[in-house]
Length: 248
Image: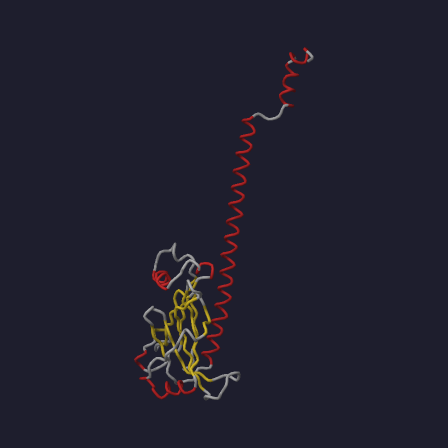
């Protein structure tokens, strides 16, 4: 080794620089890099979660628009001056029924009128789980005529969720509120004892998406969700209010 190089101060500084970083410098750089990577992954994960939530909201909203449009079309064919059935079942879900005219695509073999029943019932999705669904039942001409003949004393029509087709899924709450205008034109609750039909119905629909529904396995858990006021438990519940004006 050159003796002049080993004893010269400037040469010593050059050798240290050429030898690389110290252990402390490497550990500091690794720590900073790790923190940056953790922050980056956290941001990506949160963005992905927000995207999935947004997509579920969009899907749910699109499905609801189709559902309400379907119900509006159904109620638009309601026969005037016929009874409007409205009640609440033991699970605190609303049920309603009305008489309507059959459209051109339906068979008229059993008459020109049909009764529609909307209701919520819990039914199985597979062997291990189930969920509340909104069903629509259409009565044949004979059953519809019996409702007409029964008038104000006719019982609420029967239904069967094992044979009826669901039109909406993962229902947390389905509430239908009948309304009528008072003498000043303001909306007030419909008084069913008057023997008249509501002039408008307000539909309150709460539901969750398929991903959130996977956490609930039985009817007891669904009922608990519908009754809780805990914001944390209800963060996946989407609430929508829709109003439909009825014929007299």
